Structures are given as structure tokens and as C-alpha cells.
Length: 164
Image (cartoon, rainbow, N blue to C red; front, side, top):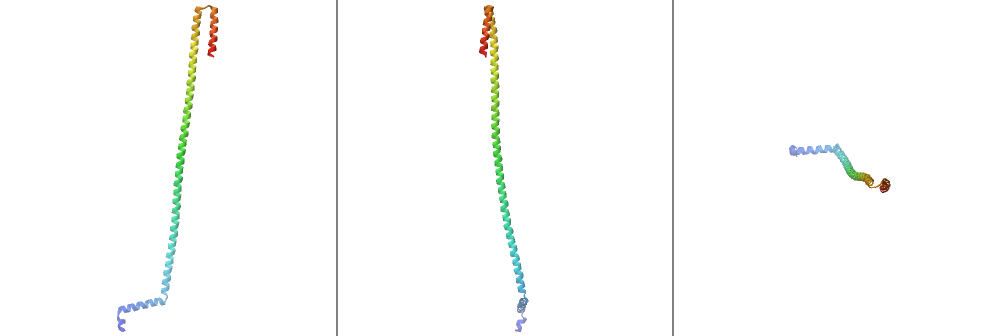
């Protein structure tokens, strides 16, 4: 048995067992276990906190994506409304322009008709004056003065009646 105590491997094993026995005797095992349990609890709480933060981050991400999508839809709606408003204004402007052109055309036609009527009246008046002067010359050469006056008065009355 003494030979065992001279073997170094045996002695290392014996000292190791003795060391572990001393550790158990003084309660180091319980302290180590408590420290490991505390460390495990701290890691668990950190993991839980990380999970909560991740969930909050995902919720915020979803909220911002929803807001972005809503803003894009609103922008599309605004663009669509602006396009419709521009089309409406273009149609209204086109309609007003057509009305204005029609009004000016009608005024020009009326002005042309008045000018034409005035020209026709002027030509008739000039023709009447020429006819009266010619008739006066012809009657003056062919008839006596009493007859001339009566014919002139009758002709003038008839011309006046036709012109009115």
C-alpha cells in the first residue's frame, strides 16, 4: 500500500478527491450552483427583453409600412384628383372658347348683314335718285310744265311708298 502513495498519479487523484471533498464540505458547490443559476436567470431576462424589443421593433416596422402605404395611396389619390381637375378645366376652357368663337362669329355675321343691308339701301337710294333725275329730264323734254309737276309728284309718292 505504501507503493500506492509513491505513485504520483495516485497522489494527484487522491488530492483531487480531497480537494473536491473540501469544496463540498465548505458549501462551495451551493455557491457555484447559485451563481450559475443567477447567471442563467440574468441571461433568461436578457433574452426576454431582447424578444420584447424585437416584437416592438416589428410592430413599429409594420406601423411605418402601413403609414407609408397609406401615404402612397393618398398621393395617388391626390394625383388622380389633380388629373381629373385638369381634364375638367381643359374641357371647360375648350367649351368657353367654342362659345366665344361662336359669339364672335355671330357678331361678325350680324355686322356683315348690316353692312350688306346698308350697301343695298345706298344702292337703291342712288338708283332712285338717278331714276328720278332721268325721269325729270325725260319728262321735261316731252311734256308741259303742269303735266311734269303732276308726274313728278306721283312718281315721288310711288317711290316713297315702295321704299318704306
